[in-house]
Image 1 (cartoon, one colour):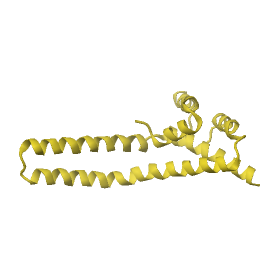
Image 2 (tube, one colour):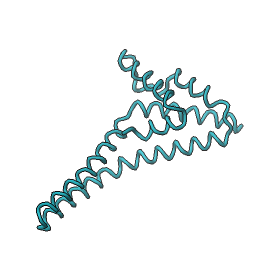
Image 3 (cartoon, helix red, strand yellow):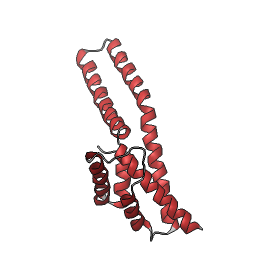
Length: 152
């Protein structure tokens, strides 16, 4: 399972480019040169800029639209998790309180738990993907600059 941001960058720029950017940030973290307050990375910025500089404005605007959709999806996953947790607990309590045959109750609990664990993994992956978020911020700044330059 991968984050929404990883899927977007991989789709837009390719898996090799994403891996290159990810390992660039990972290297900074390992070497303890990573500054979480500094959101930009010149090397990644220049690389993304060189890839996107020849695209037309409509293509760049479509990329920006997909980026905004991915950001909304990531936010929605975080917001819905607490509601999903509440519904999961209520559903488990409902199944147990119904007095059904034990095997029917167990199958229901197992099915609900499997779905809930999937949602937990999805939430955790998207909540704690700070390297992907930094790559997305650089990507957005490149898109904004190129759209501004080509629109003027």
